[in-house]
Length: 119
Image (tube, rainbow, N blue to C red; front, side, top):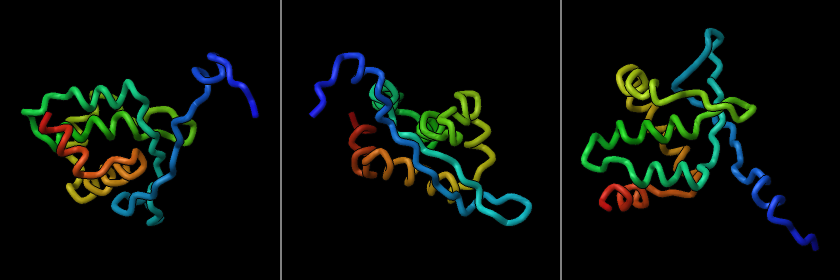
């Protein structure tokens, strides 16, 4: 048994990165794009929980993409400036697929998201 210190706990990265192939996005060779989805940190989950619930739910879900999509090193792929281009240019099927994977990796169901949206 290891008696962890405060610094051990605070500095330990417990947000896993999970590779996900996106079947809707392919390179010129026809290979699926792979992105990495990170688990939300508590502060990021709080951002999602405190979004404007009266707004467009699909557009609100884009914030999940911004917060969770990373490269293989854990660097965020998107910023808040990418919400509108993603919303305007990507297919609903690809965004729904990606959101579903983000929810699965973060142990959140569609019911969880709907409950958050109602609060």
